[in-house]
Amino acid sequence: MQRPLIKHCRQCGTPVQYRIPDDGDTRERAVCPACGTIHYVNPLLVVGTVPYLGDQVLLCQRAIEPRRGKWTLPAGFMEMDETLAQGAARETAEEAGARIEMGAFYSAMSIPRIGQVHVFYLARLLSAHFDPGPESAQARLFTEDQIPWDELAFTAVRRTLECFFEDRRRGGFGVHDFDIA
Image 1 (tube, rainbow, N blue to C red):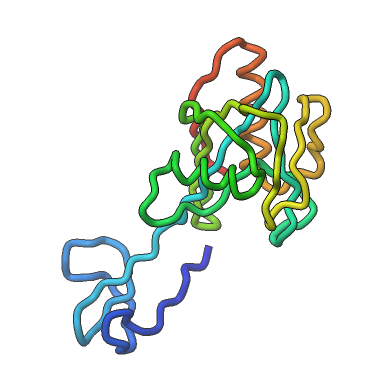
Image 2: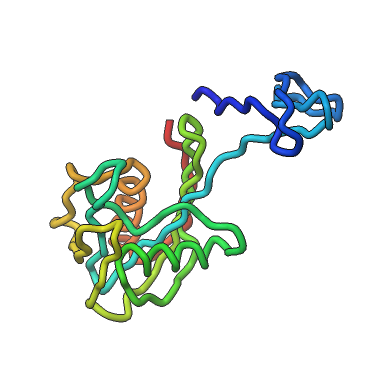
């Protein structure tokens, strides 16, 4: 992945230089020659849930790009001043209008080529009534054989759902950690 290009210092506006900082760092960074500020570019966190009711999982059909019209688990970018679980619960409420009981941490996927880490929690649905927000065209429950596998928006969602249904067949949920190349 091409790193985002920082051109000017966020502190003082001076054009930055790309070099390895003198602070013992080992990576090239955008460094301000005027005030010395080192600008770091780090992965974004995407947080969400695997909302389930019995043998069904809640999916949302995207009403926005990227991948408008495709299906996904409710998830989105973590905001400042919230925990992973708070962000996952917020995204579930925003995208699906679902009432949930937060469950355990379930999966983490590193996706280095796009600079993201996706994190999902299990979430038991408290109702089969949904009120999707503006980012979702609809929210629906699916059994494993009803999942629109060819219409899923993201690899991370597919992998998480595969793990979920496999764990369910085994009778216990584990924690999953994998990389998506």
